[in-house]
Length: 278
Image (tube, rainbow, N blue to C red; front, top):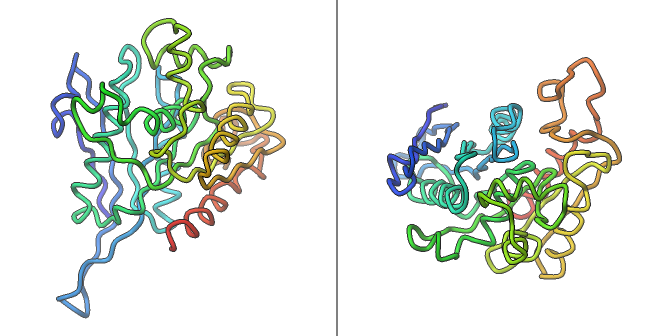
């Protein structure tokens, strides 16, 4: 296995505005042709992990532990460390588009199936994923790069409603200033489910004090109304930012780890196995 880091601004110079340095950390399992030298190399599905952090930092347990969880389940895994405050739209959306473009252009050397790339985002990272689907054809993005939709999206306790008073601050950091009424509408992904929105798995907890579970319910309703394959799980208990909800990722490894919540990884595997015919 190879583990290495790609500085996306070196591959996509338009990302380097004001010194931005988005990074793509790659966990890539190699293959060898053993029996048939004429055979094509095997490929794996891929996950692109996007940590949360409210666009001010990165959730410390929402990167490596998640990537390694899916690596161990047969995926190639990548983590996007995108630009946070003071950077704002369209920077993060351009970085997501560049990461997707990089995976597609380098699919052969990365041993990935371009038709089986799932994005996984938590909290603000979930907002970033849902916003990407809504904004990848926007003029701000199209001026620099062609946005490539994901084949699946996995959202953990996501922010998807800019009109929610508790979540407006996150969206304002994404946009870079207090929101106008028009911007609340534009930057609420739940209002812009469309042709670039992939099949989506969502999970949340009913006792999340950081992001209301109503965000997930509202987004799921929009997805289902649009005819998009959707799976939603609301767990009865658990705080915000649980990540994989294991001893490895919770803030207090000796406390309550909300054991039931850790089942989301297995449920996602079932969802992706059916979707990607794994």
